[in-house]
Length: 241
Image 1 (tube, helix red, strand yellow):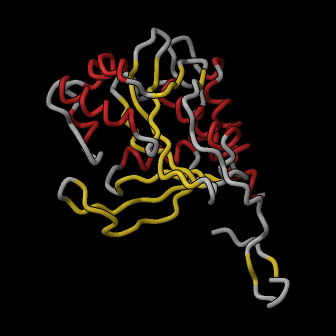
Image 2: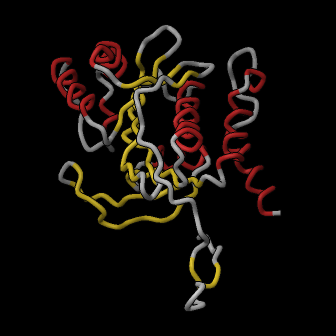
């Protein structure tokens, strides 16, 4: 909970601190280059490599509101619909060979409130537990805070999706609570876990991401020397002192 406040100039009741109310920008078809790959606006030509990466991997769709798709034709048609949307605004995650291995979106876009969410994250097994998978989250967060000007960056997931809950904490989001019976998804009840990251927290989170992504954080076999969770925990301890 944020507690910063000041007296209202007329009533003297406590109110929140003044903020820059200039609206944030909406996402655009940028290419976000990283050390391990890049993100680019999702486009129809990504369908073949994405389908190759996710075909037969039904478990990655369990907590999504759609999927799995039966075959390439169904997947390509689904992707065609996603490409047209402005919210969620989809990006393909591309490896160094040029193959699309996953999708992440910026969504629930509220420029006037300077709030945006990262969601609809579809990671193929080839992207999971890789530096590129983490780097994609770093690149999107940096873009949202530093280029687009958002002050609140959200992560929401099915409360039973343990992997997504762990990922949110690993990336440095703060758990805020669970909305009970929040929605019906695939004809089943869903409670939704809420996480957030604030612009004031981003410099510390950015430093943790960059320390983790640095080549020297990996040994000759590609194994991490220090985990991102550990790096974010260190930042939290320093902030509390």
